[in-house]
Image (cartoon, rainbow, N blue to C red):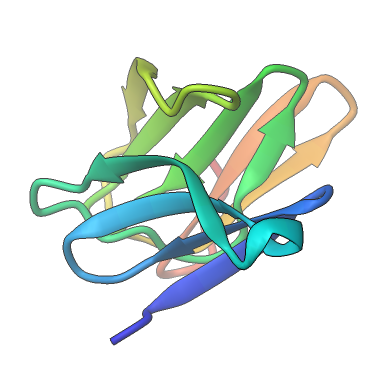
Length: 103
């Protein structure tokens, strides 16, 4: 079953327990790209920053993906689980932990 989704301009980013997909609603939700999650669980708000998509994952990892290809560009980690996703304040990106701590 679908576990989450987020709109990225004209596209829709959606995920289940196995796969993250960027789809095109104008083309009957055809996949632009997909990425196997390999045990990661996206949570909360997804953040699009220019050519990058930042995705918080429950175990405290943050995926940074190329918006056009879905290729992983990098990862960040925080010392506890995340629940509320990511927010941008000015040029800074903040992750919101399960206990509301900001990283």
